[in-house]
Image (cartoon, rainbow, N blue to C red; front, side):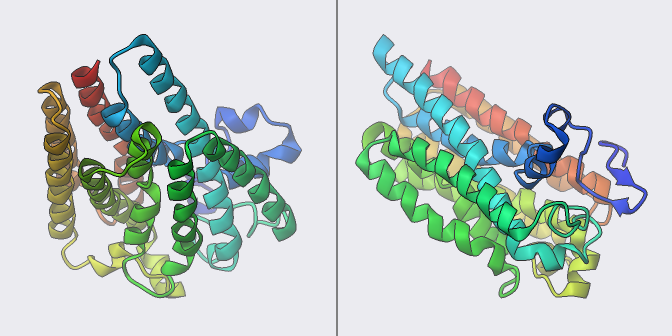
Length: 313
């Protein structure tokens, strides 16, 4: 692989066994780190971005105490994102272990490779979910209710690829729940601006996860797994352009409804430029390029956050 060195003797894979987070663990614990995808931090970064956007956009920041509260919320969202992303991946691998064994990119994951048993993976899922629950319990009652409501979406997502060509929509609903959570944590509400931010995040997920799913188009067709990558394969750039445009429009609407200052629009310009680069240059049948473009979305998250913080602080 040109970008990440992710080629193995068995073929293309996104497993990174030499990642520092795995090297630091004792040998027995490394399969659990891989179940949680600690070797691929892009997942929790994508889950965390809407949380940080939302709390930074909606939290009051007029006093020293309010800024301290915002910083604590940022830290809690970080911990919750890492824990819940790991729990979600473990749940996904439990449900998909038979499918993963037949997909080149995923057949070396701990469950299909026999490194952990389903019971051990389930226990690890419970531990990670408990950490996420502890974070959620530290918020106000409205936030707890909204957070619990996300669990149904998280639970059904791994099953969607079996019944619809649009599982990325369900992933978007789950991965961008933080866009709602930031507002309800800070203000006990879900405002129209938060809903617009949420809608933009869902459209963004359709861009990046369609690109991610392009890696598996061949194997998915063989085993019968559905995705937007397969659904859009006749005109991928056109569909990606549509969802990129919706992303920018919704993020713009969120900023306008929030009445945020001009630096936000500079950040949004950076987001639009990044999306144009991704969509315009992606190579749908080049696995390494798709993985590279997918991982580059961490920078998009930082661009929008920088615009928000520059405008607020």
